Length: 492
Image (tube, rainbow, N blue to C red; front, side, top):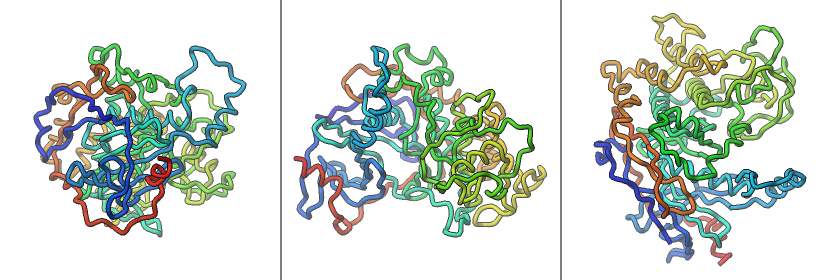
């Protein structure tokens, strides 16, 4: 059974313009029945989706490119995730074995840890409707199947590749600027909705097929903050019963460390902040100056360790952690390596670098080798704007860190194409956004037929380079070994 989450008419005048796809039509479809069979060429078929090739694999599931046979073989990406991980569930049960329970036990403790993560990711993605956020199209949640399938738009350009094997940048400075601008717009929308992404990094930024636009993906560790939603939109702009999904009302996850170690903000790992009155060392110092963990820190790692240093005043964990991660991402794109630590730094050393060390730029940035002018170039130097933007992003003090709104003005200066036209800041300003407010889809992931909430989303406009070109379906590649979809066939 499939149901569409109805939404009122879109008030954004650019919504129907294919050159301005910031509020593309369509709603998240909730499907409760799954049918599995094979096509004539022995390809697995899940409902109306014919499997093509795998593009990603993780600990709990896989991502496949599929063709939507009901929509002229449109390419989509399907993320298939197991509801439960027996090993993880057993460990979680052991941790909670001796803990008392009551009627006030959080919903996150009543659900399996993995299923909770999946459903929270779905609930957050159902809130998102913006051109710089990967769109969730359908959720196939058959209770009789061990997997939940998330059907999303497919971006043919793939994830952003930012360095070669020699750890040298492969993107030009102009390309880094365009990526940064797109991510700023995406983060502005997320933060307005009360969503903290918590894992901004190059691997979670995808190109469209024509490489003219970047979209933010992977909301597996994202957090929804109702207090932030009220602060962004104003109490009078949000209904009293918004949000109506209890899984999003639990703030306990925000107190847990999540994300990728090299991109974590200092306030997230504040226990590593030194309380000694010693000068800040450079992040380019050798790792021999600090005790190293034997494990090597990987850019795509999400592991967590506990620190030993006590701190007197912990900074609040807010949406500013996404701004810090964007700064680290921009640094990686420009220089081909992380700003803190070295490739062989363990997590202990890495976190000490992030909390207690300053960053240093290389002499040249981008594959086009433009001069940076050093850490603090003069205002007349060509690298001043970029270095100043990095400095604003990578402020260890949350109070001094630049906000997204201010980053947009800095980006306006950074963007040479917009120097003669300030429409980028004007058309995406929050006041302009509120003039086109419309109610969004419901947050409920279980009962899609229930009454919609009065929550508001923001259709955002800005000067586009040109419309993105949708990926066209090519001839089917050679058959792949059946793994994810075929498991469903064997279970039926």
